[in-house]
Image (cartoon, rainbow over all chains, first blue to last red; front, side, top):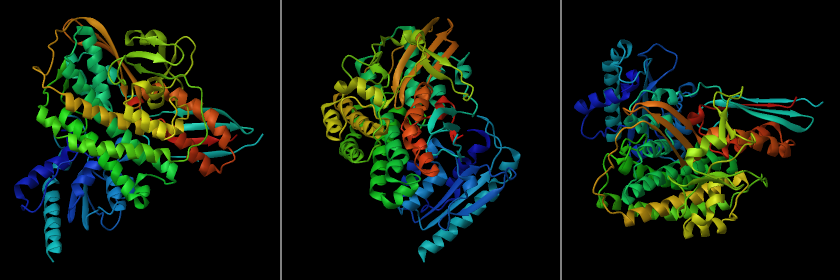
Amino acid sequence: MRGDDAIGVLALRALEKISPPEIRLVEIEGEATQLLEALTGAEGAILIDACRSGSLAGTIHRFDVAVSPIPTNLATFSSHGFGLAAGLELARSLEQLPRLCVVFAIDVEEFTPGAALTPGVSSRLNELLAAVVKETERFLSETAS
Amino acid sequence: MTSKTVKVDVLARVEGEGGLKVTIRDGLVRSAELNIFEPPRFFEAFLRGRNFNETPDIVARICGICPVAYQMSAVHALENIFGVSLSPQLRALRRLLYCGEWIESHVLHIYMLHAPDFLGYAGGVEMARDHGDLVRQGLQLKKVGNEILTLLGGREIHPINVRVGGFYRTPLKKELLTLKESLKWARDAALATVRWTGTLEFPDRERDYTFVALRHEEEYPFNEGRIVSNRGLDISAGDYDKYFEEIHVPQSTALHSRFRDSGAAYLVGPLARYSLNFDRLSALAQEAALAAGLDRICRNPYCSIIVRAVETLYAVDEALRVIETYEEPKSSFVPVEPREGEGYAATEAPRGLLYHRYRLESDGAIAEAQIVPPTSQNQASIEEDLVEFIGGFLDLSDEALRYRCEQTVRNYDPCISCATHFLRLDIDRG
């Protein structure tokens, strides 16, 4: 783990204990083709990732990607430019973006390998999980109707 | 004197951050400089004092696109110190791992990074809206490379199964056979990719490059061979530093490589590898290359997209051959004993020759490491391409000229996170 950068993985592990069985939890390394594969066939998707928006560490952002792309200032840099934002836009171009698709991004500040979450980020973990659970309930409600 | 300046903030579809400045005076391109401004990646220094066994996992972190190349050059250089030879099956597995990386890397560049230049799109995302089936084919083909890395390397990115002397775990025959069906599909898809790239329109531009690549007695090169050129060079990796040198240039925090005696630039990568090793390709790959319009030697860098497709086809073909002939080795590695010494190796990363040199203390600690990535070696050649080719495009609008400059750089699939980082483009017309 690399400090706050682990927030997505840690949130996923917490969700493994509380998520309903119809929700599939997938950990991906940020590579766009992995993301596309994970999205294939999904009715809805909730993505959790670390970000650097310039806001205080621990700030939680919610983006309804089904409506519009992630803001360009938060588009991640990744191998040959295909990070999360580009992967989602590629899915949109290929008509593989789920009907319901929300990204939760949390501002982070510490990336030292082996370091724990900083207090500013760890103190928001429960709030992040609550937001994800609420979104999950909305998805289940909408996909059932 | 005519005077004009064109400036672009972001050069897209390359790996990393940096810039490019093209200076034009009186209708002639006077200079082109790659301005790599992100701090160098101090991996050579990170490695000092670490145990040799840590090297494959550390150098894999240099690049998310070609980690296998870094691992392969590292383990071969270290094994050069220990004087060990791998069993034929361990050697074949290393070829298979490299096949996976070539497929992943080449297909990403062909479909998502380079094809938009030929089809007139800003990028792969935009191209996918109109060419969805084509992009899906590319993504599926790339996935086959990912599958090889996952099975043999332990995961898709930054594999963790490579060790000095072999692997931590070797696969069962039945595990490798699970790849066979997807590889058979991939062979057809790769062949279709060669045919499709051959239909693209290419600027009629050639240069008389000095090609430098590995050449093996029997095989298309991955991990072994002499370092040769089309101008008579024929040396072992141990003599690399006698013939090549890295120099610092003011505009870049990445070192440039040149011939030590003449100061001349040279070209590594698919064009060099293909042109020096056409006869080592599989029959299928040779036939596909010629049918797609390539000659046995390719000097047009814009046609590198076809050459990458041919090498993808070869990698799929070779992966199938390795899987079909694989026999489970008795041991997953050859034991090594730390000793003082210096070792050298060059392997063929997707982007070209990757040279590593290590000096070890008697307890196996690394005293010195030298890593020369292909993009560092190609930087001077990229600049020379721009000076020579862009002069023929000066009647284009600024936007079209800028685009052509970017395409000319992308011919190299530059991996600036290996050679440091890259991004920005200025065209100065005086």
